[in-house]
Image: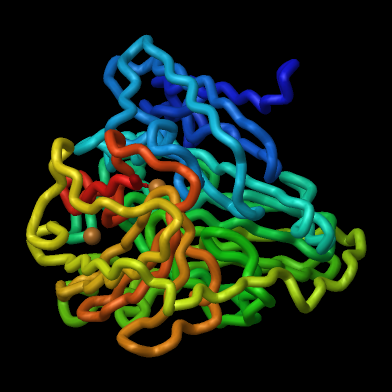
Length: 432
Ligand code: C2O
Ligand code: CU
Ligand code: CU
């Protein structure tokens, strides 16, 4: 924190080598290191600045996924940072406690830059969340779990992934950049912050012993109450916070067990696109003596519904088979939608394709009002910025773009399957 109270972070995008396998260096990129980046942590009400440097030999950007902030600070494709240049966005943290993340967003190159290793977590806290007494000791009982798929040669060097309809799919998972990961815990209650930072793969996270997954938060913050699920589905870009209660000496494995049904894939395309892949994600190993944890309060958050009679504008977004939205591919020079600041918007996202896509909107956290006319299940009833859209389903989203207007600098909405985004499955909106 500097003299005027600003919380200052520094990120330096750089090339390096990472030994995912001891003795087998692979060429990778990272922020402030060779792979991934530091977890940034800030508090609601703080003013933050990030000094971003680019030590790569090509331009990139850093986008703050899930963050409410002015368009010029967003780090999308209009805020390129040239090699050896720097960029220092700053903004006020004015949203609730949540697990957000950051990653590059250079148009046409996003899949490549993220796959090489440029990504990190951005955790926000607030007073209301702190008052709940949830596990919050970073790295001890509050642990980032950044899940990515990768590929390795027989001697352990990272190799390029196979391309399916969704983009590059690797046949092995890494967590926080680690092969064969495990987590030693000494608290009986652990909070895992799951981030799907994969470029294309969707996961169905579940516990190996089939105990329920206790979901407490989605992209934009805490749910009203925890939800017990047999799996949590996360498409690229989505986050989930889950609680795990362990007994002394216990070992429990977080897995991803996909099925064609959960993947929204039917027929032969399911097999070639990971529709029935199973992985061990992370083994959690409990110590013989565990620190007790207080019970988790039943009420975690208050989420007021939007008043639909206030909807000022309804917009339709049709995702089509040529990786376009409303029949158009992304054009950096075209603003597709102009939104009036501080008004309620209804966005109807129609996945008119036979394959799933992941729909993300910058600057805002939205609510899902309905899926094909039906109220969303409890795990999708909270704040979201990215949603998995199943083939031939329609998602009605409600959102309000607050505070910041800028007719000249657009924000993005796009498919978060990064290869699709790179192909142009993205559009731009300005808030005026
Ligand atoms: Cu996570 Cu526009 O991106
Ligand atoms: Cu984003
Ligand atoms: Cu897509």
